[in-house]
Length: 61
Image (cartoon, rainbow, N blue to C red):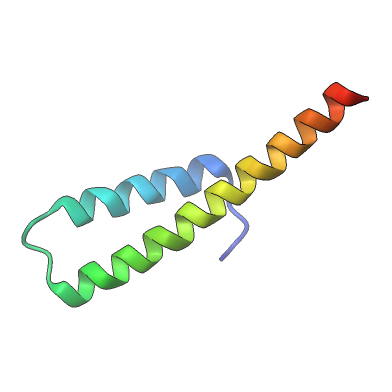
């Protein structure tokens, strides 16, 4: 996945969720969107973890 900002990743994830909420989406497209959503979610979580580690490190310093 390209290096994108947290905000961009979150916006893309929101778009995926919105697409998945559409009841007319074909199953194969829904599965692809779901997989993309998992990847975006994981990337966001990792960025938050890194930010938390940095903040904790600064507080302890």
